[in-house]
Length: 242
Image (cartoon, rainbow, N blue to C red):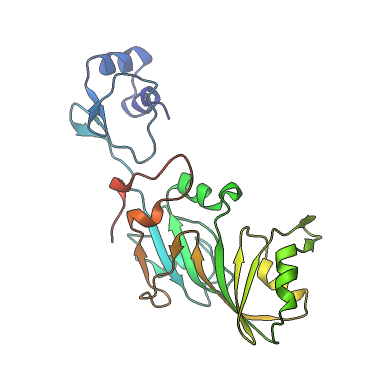
């Protein structure tokens, strides 16, 4: 929001009071004196008045190795959620940047930065999501052409974007998607009447699941991991560390 609006909400000042504070050089943003009330500040921007900082939310970016048997939700009355894998102090005010099915495993990203998570899922950036898949029946080479061509999904009334398929073993493959339709991988293999028995997400865009994380473990993302395509970057100075 605009700096003048930010100050007005927190100091309960009228427009004239806010203008006087700014004109007097009493307000700093990121340590710099700002006198233009139109200056934009974000939810994690450090703003101070006379050197005293306002309470600022700390940006949080977590990588979790999702185990089986928990739901991709922030709360659930009947099942354990992915937030239950985190220490309570780390789980405050988070949302999920992408989901996995109840029994699927692998990379989950959790954050309180809505702008970052929206860019992560923005189809314009075409960030790949990479999965390791095991199936009930053998996977044959003709699957790859169908995945690349795309399948029509009547429920969404759309044809899937081209997807990559790399056969790793008779019943195992690596699948790369550039979108996230409902149960997309299961439905793609379902076209061949081949049931998916295990699904594990390895990567989202540039972020790979840390191989040192056991199922249920998590860690903070580093500054290099949170940099995503787009015009704006999260403030890496404000990363919350465990």
